[in-house]
Image 1 (cartoon, rainbow, N blue to C red):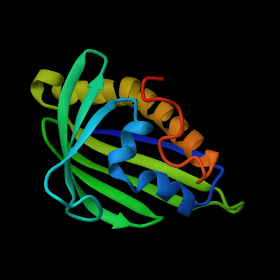
Image 2: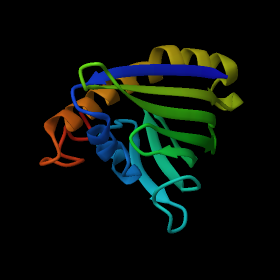
Image 3: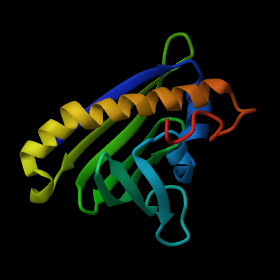
Image 4: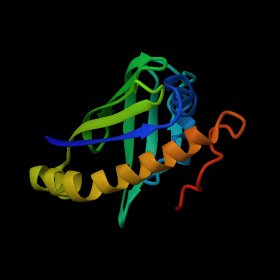
Amino acid sequence: MGTVAVEVVIDAPPARVWEVVEPVERHVDWMADAVAITFQGDQRRGVGTTFDTATRVGPIRLTDRMTITEWEPGRAMGVRHVGVVTGVGRFTLQETVGGATLFSWREQLHFPWWLGGPLGEGVAGRFVLARIWRRNLERLKAIAEAGPSHGAGAGPSPGG
């Protein structure tokens, strides 16, 4: 299983960063690889929420089905990937000494054979996904640091 881990310090308190991360449907505002999010059922927040994310990484397009497995407002959000790509992921928010937020994103993913299996996991994780996700965190940082008056979605556009 390939592991990808990235993090960023955001000059905003965890409560503000959570305001941006908590609305799952707005993850497309800061995740360049997430094209669209469609919920399965009426639940939109908390453990048990299930959604499909149309994902695009270069020429590869797939639907990533996820279920939220952990929900600690202001602290953590965990997911289980149950679609084409399987595995687990987790965001954590930790307040720093200066009142900023250390935002960490860690995923353990398993790719099907046609996406390269274990070899694809290592190559994609180390060279492709980590790079994309670092840029995603820079976008998240820009939105969160813009402040609540700008709201989620006020940051850079999804394409760049």
